Length: 555
Figure 1 (spheres, rainbow, N blue to C red):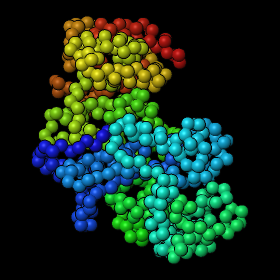
Figure 2 (cartoon, rainbow, N blue to C red):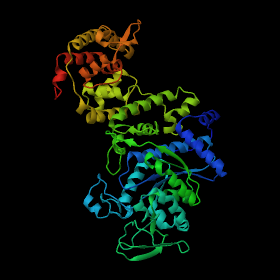
Figure 3 (cartoon, helix red, strand yellow):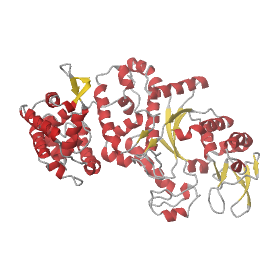
Figure 4 (cartoon, rainbow, N blue to C red):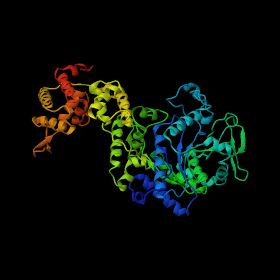
């Protein structure tokens, strides 16, 4: 998901539509524009995202970068790219390791390094000079693979190189003002020992949470007791200290003059603290966007140390990067379950938005998610078969190879080939992997009851009257005609074509459960058109003979 140069021929129609755009990236971009007007302008606008490398990069980290990229692009369009922008991905890798992540090897060895800065903790994977460097490399490799336009920043580098020296001296000078912000937010026992400075022990190398005996602003030094009780006086500059995480937020904003940063809802209560510290240090707090947290399949917050929920690699095993970007775009202020079952729906929604884009006017296009996902240049792709349909096709045909699925697809859409539709070819591979790992293990066929047997027999006969190349709509009508002959499948709340009761979902649920071994699925007429009328009749025969239910282990 790159941020390409905004084209010189950007039409006034698109700019005008974007100016009135309702999509959330436009709302955030307009806040940044108002900020610049209030400040009297800037030579450059800085977007920032943060990463805590205490655990492996997870999908939420990608979400921050993707969403910030969307806001950055919206800003560039609204300003016609008149102001240079940068995106800085900042890693707090000088933070002390407070606990051992549950999803990494060599945990006993890691336990020996508790409270060391992450860039001094040995890499449990044995591939980099430190655990922090390993996790930073993993993050950068992923962001690079997506083509994000960003600059990576290491907290360790900034502290050791002296880039934060000026702000650290300012913290010493305004120490009491910062304490006045922080102390009311702390418990009484924590107040007694709190300091915004965390010295790095000269004897053990660990990050120390100790009270300051003296802060000398004139000399830029602090005095404290080391772990062995020795009184130490040392400069706050040159990487000898780091800041506590709350002051670090505000100090970084002030030092770098950050204009925009988003963060999760778990930071919301601390946002006023970050802002006040930034102001105390002479900075102007950036514009914020607070997003809701992702939840796992049990409704628990996703944690990089626990490794629950979906990883970046897992999503990309079963779906495209663009579908992941769509998931990040949709309702960022609503808590969402981020687990395997959201993938098929998100994939089909992505292609639906992509299909609609070419038919929309400028106002519709700039509010279409794919405009933001592709930075204003979505590809022209029409997907003849949905992901949900492919999953059902794999299920019914027991296909284990792309060639088998393409045989069905080619009959359904003769002009489509793997070469002419690479996106569909990729989707075929995703569908096979997803089915094998998540659908097949849960498939449970049940035997039809007497009413269902009668209806299935009638459906078999009805399908036998249709031409082999009947379109999905004609097949769907035939399926509905059969259901209307059975009171069980009528829904008085719906209207049929003759004004009578319509067909309830109970009929389709029966078809899914007896023929496909699942509770729900796509439009059944479309499935039959893709799978084949004769093949569907053979499937019905197996269900009536009890062969499908007998093949279910729990049956």
